[in-house]
Image (cartoon, rainbow, N blue to C red; front, side):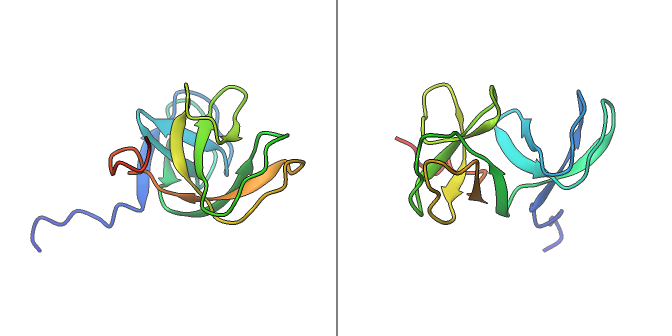
Amino acid sequence: MKNFVQPGKVLNVTLSGTVAAGDVVEAADLIGVAESGGVSGDVIAVALEGVCEVAKVAGTAFNQGDVLYWDADPGNLTKTATGNKPIGYAFEAALSAATVAKVLLAPGIARVGAIA
């Protein structure tokens, strides 16, 4: 296909602040995980697909397959949709006391009608 650009698994993002490898990065409505760190003005690769281990809200259990959202402040995964952006699905169950969870990144989740 002559108009193919790339698989779309990674997005190059110009940073507006400091980011560490593994941090969740938002680019408008796209959310992914930084493959490397950088500072303001750097361009880094942000993974848009795959399974990543990310900080989660304490006190809430996740079931495998739950829709997960990114709560930018305080910076963790949640099951609460209101005010948060969809990031993907729980790859496996996580206990309420857990501080991290595995998320299957799904950047197109809001566009495909998965979120009510």
